Image: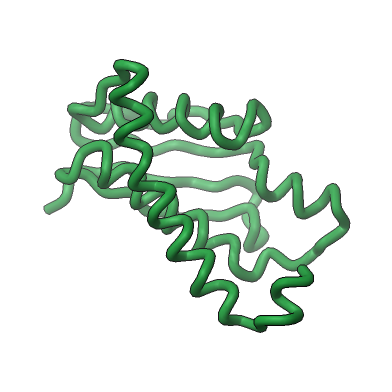
Length: 137
């Protein structure tokens, strides 16, 4: 909050660079743990483990649909959103972009043939986050 007051909206640009670089490190973490990422289902499972390591156990969700080419998932508990609420900071202005940047960078570092996108987000008022990990066209 203080950094945003000092720097202004430039902080979102800085956070996106940080989150992009952080996502790229997912591959090294996955490899060090021997986690697979050859298809969408494996990428989702590996990203779930990496996210739990980085963000903690508050991140909760479920798979809605899955096969080797695509996973549709639903997140019902978000560590970052909970942190905003716990400190009484109501604004989640940059959170959707930061989350998308980290997750997309993670997925693409795990397997460059795949990408990730969100279709719903709790931090913008949706009741849950919904995402797709898909084979790039």
